[in-house]
Structure formats: structure tokens, C-alpha cells
Image 1 (spheres, rainbow, N blue to C red):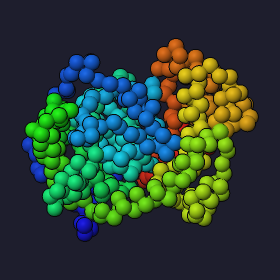
Image 2 (cartoon, helix red, strand yellow; image 1 turned 90 degrees about the horizontal axis):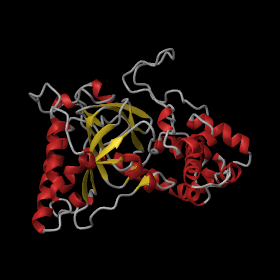
Image 3 (cartoon, one colour; image 1 turned 45 degrees about the horizontal axis):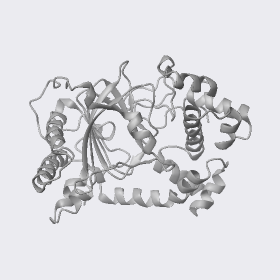
Length: 379
């Protein structure tokens, strides 16, 4: 696909001015009201299926790998930064959040839509005093790509052009998010699509939805090579992620991590930051602390045993790093998570705290939208 010119310079930040087809919608849609039983907790649903590589897997119905579900996201637990093989479309039904994608923090407000491909590490961070509610569409790209038509892959172009400046969030004021939501709600009752008619209905509605996104992102500059290059970079790091998953208790230095990937130390540091949005040291420390959190919540093992299992020989140092990242001591975390009172404490930031794009970084002298905001934990 050839490069295209962006419609305006403002599109390189959060993409909140990007609109292709003029819409008459000037007001946000009325808030969706669904039975509470329709919503599922995002943390409980996603976190257990994230592996050491930060990849989330979802169990789709094999004949028709599409799912539409409603999620609640609160500020008590945050899902780890993760990516996935499927493509994701999120509509924010209520509340205020941020889309944390790589090293970017994009404002995500009620009525907005976010689209996320398969190569970028991301998560949704609640910014409301009450949980936000999200309508989520997950689908395997092969459902469309392998449709048999010569132009089927064109439906997926918005998900394949997602470089570091891609405007993932489509504002509600464009009218596009509500149209997408309406199609998601048409897909939902057809799942699981057990009959040929049901599968035809799902694919038809999905293609209509994707066509809205294709139109929305038509002016955006990008190439499919962006997606292919990111996939190649992930493959270079896969041996390291496998090693981390199998040897969580072992300490590892940057030099050893680079050797496992078969590249130079300087190339490794640059590549890892480009792929995950984080330095390797930061990623590894947070990975170990997140493993420790799971052990503290689910086992009665001693602090000394847990610290050794996640690679800290010194229990005191383990406590220092844990508190720096989570915001409380390991013992306090265990007590609060078991008493279900973590919400009484300010949400721990399991990954570097960023400032939303487009907001001033006061006191830093940087321009709005600069990347790599100061880390909350100095690791």
C-alpha cells in the first residue's frame, strides 16, 4: 500500500481531530443501560491469560472467531500491558479512561472508540471515581483475510497501519463510534454462530463495521510494512520472553538478554524499547513484581520464599522494589487483596506512569504530547 498524506498535522498526536465523512452528530449518544449481569470484570477475565511475553489469548468459537462482550474496568486492579493475536475494538459506554499504548497515553472518553491491532502492548486505565464500562469486540483477522475474495484483506488496513503516531481513538463527536457500536450489538445475539445463516450474519455485520473504520482512516499515512516490521521485531525477542517465562527466579542482565536474542547490546536495548515501549530493566522488574503479587494473593508462602522465587536474593531489596512499584509493602498488599480492600489505597502503577498526549508536562520544559514521561518508580 502506498504512503498517503495525513489530512492535518494534528493527526499525529491523539487523532481526536481525524474525521473523514462529515457527520451531523454533535451530541454524545445517551449512555447505554444494560443489566449488571451482562458485564464481566476486565481484570479477572484478561489477567490470568497473559503469559511472560505479555500475550493474551482468547478462546474463540472455532467456526466463527468473533466475540462481543461488556466489561467493567476499575482503578483497583490494572491488567498488565499486553498484546494479542486477535484485533480489538472498544467502545467506552461510561466513565473516563486512558488508552495506554506502548509509550503513549491517549485520552479515552465516554462515547469514544478505540481500535487496537495485534502487535502493540497496551491496556485501558480507568480515570473515573467509579468503574468504566466498555463494549468490546474481539475477532481473529483470518476470519476476514481468508474469506476468499481478492479484496478481503483491505477491510483490515486500519489495524495494519498502526505505527507510533497512529490515532487509535476515534472521538464520539464524529458519529462513527455509535455506528460501530450499533453493529457490535447486532453481532452479539448471533454469537455463537452455530448455523450457516448465523455465520453469514456475523461476517456481514463485521464487514460493515470494518468499512466504517476503513473510511475513517483513509487519509492516514502508513503502510502494511509497518505491521510486518513489528511482527519481525517481536520474533527477534521471542526467545527472551520464553526464557523469562521458564526462569522467572533467575536474575538476568541486559548483556545476557541481548545474547539470548542473538543481537548486540545496543541494538537489543533500542529494539526492546521500540517493541514494548519500555526499557528491558523496567519491564523485567515489573514482570517479577507482578509474579510476586500473584503469589502473595494466591498462596501462604513466606516473603522470603516469594522473593527468591521471583529472583530477589535479598528480601529487603525485594520489599523496597515492591513498594516502589506497587505503592505498599508486600505484607500490606497481601492483607488488602485478601480482605478485598485494595480500593482503599491509591491504585498502584504496575508500569511507568505517562501523561496523556496533548497535555502540558508542567515543569519539564517539554512540548505537549512528548513521549516517555517521567516514571513514577525510578527503576
